[in-house]
Image 1 (cartoon, rainbow, N blue to C red):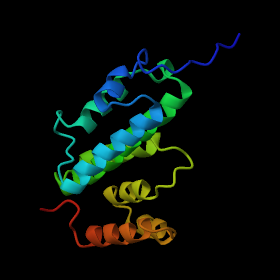
Image 2 (image 1 turned 120 degrees about the vertical axis):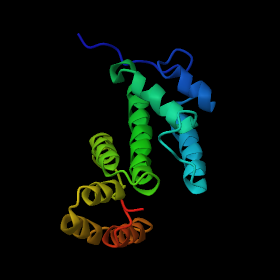
Image 3 (image 1 turned 90 degrees about the vertical axis):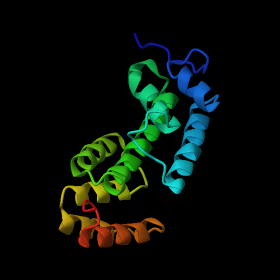
Length: 169
């Protein structure tokens, strides 16, 4: 016998702490508010996976501490989107802030594993190819990217990689 779908209630959700931390009342709002905080940190250069006090890292820890089966379908979808976004930016942090190739590889593999099948972002895959030194594949992947701003970003990343700026100080 199939169980009834879980009903969403932010006050009883296993992600309640994340909802409270960001002041969200729905999974979509959690994603929106998380994204706002993420972008503030990225634009200021303060996004750092090593800083446990950052709200993005606190939310990530909460989301990863919950078993996916305990969530509603909607919560699961937005949880995965938030985690993908965290890992996507962790790749950039590993490259730009720490010059840590192994961390970048780990984060890119994880980001790709949780990125939804029809996700519009093409940069995560490009970063994965570059941190794994697959330049020819990365060039082919980048060539297929036609939408802006990703097309410009892809070209910038290829130039940075070719010039050795990914992992050298």
